[in-house]
Length: 77
Image 1: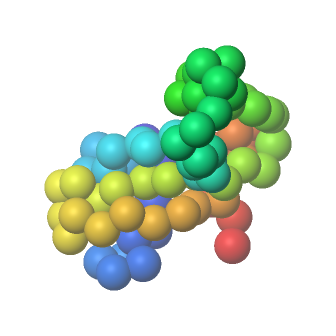
Image 2: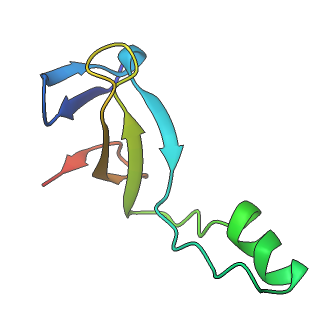
């Protein structure tokens, strides 16, 4: 099981967290359907170090950004 470091509560078991995907910049409201669909559905899904959003749902409830290597699952500073 993966151990994730909550910046507020310390290191906890992955079961306490909810994955929120990768951070994305919201486009302005007046964009084409294609641009909006890309924002909602398309993610880079790269192998290696990757920035991710996580919520400590089973603890403090805070959202935070975590850098994790998707190939090894190692949490990076």
